[in-house]
Length: 341
Image (cartoon, rainbow, N blue to C red; front, top):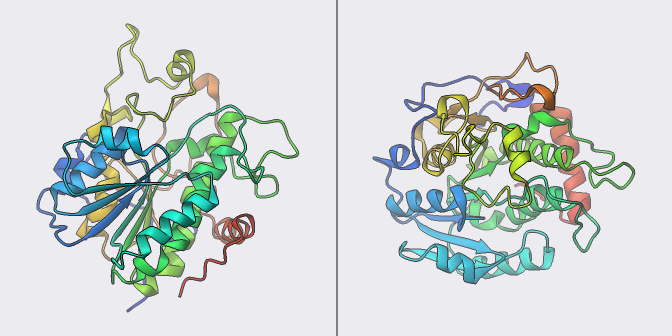
């Protein structure tokens, strides 16, 4: 298979004419797409935009597996959606990830779509059993391990995609490869979230470069600022208000062209990255508003007093050296040699 160009330094970060926009929904995107006989895994597929993602994939004919820390809650939330299987998994528990992967691999099914959608946001300082900070552990390291363990099934699909749900929040702080778990500096929930979301993008860049020769492409994305999810479970109304989520009367701000979306719109970019034929020969890119995003060359740094949700991806988040270093660090911290071959 011919190896395509990589997205180091944002080389491929330019719109490609998707035919959709910020107000498109997951069901808009999935029209005309046939996923019959395809298998997908959607982490966090039982809440928020994860449910809408699952609905769209099932509507196109896919069989979807949803790993869940709380299988009972997941089963309840997914009631009425056919062709969905819930299995237990906790992204902060390496043994749990291995157990889920072993269970799935034992089915001997090719994995066509791996959607790393689950995440936590701006949480108080928590650590997993290894001492790793929870946002980095859940949002990045857990998904790195899961992707590595599911590699045989992805490879067997002969054309799989890995979609990593990131966030505009990557703008809020650069990655700290020397102290990713806040062992030598005061804990900052916003910085921890930003670093984890930057890690999602860098992982995508490096995974796509390494994996495309095996027919596997990877994408990252910002779904939009969405109030109706579990992501902000640890956040106060005041904190969410600072991000412009609410109108003055306290109602949810629905303004998709300025980044504030409902659940159906929020899932559209994920589904587009997972299924669009227009992405057949491009990968490693960060997307938003159901399109490949531009490089945010004008970004001057995060100012919480003057919050503006700019468009695009920061140069730091698609930096080749950072992507390579993060891969090595992730292997070190998880103890997994992710040999893409």
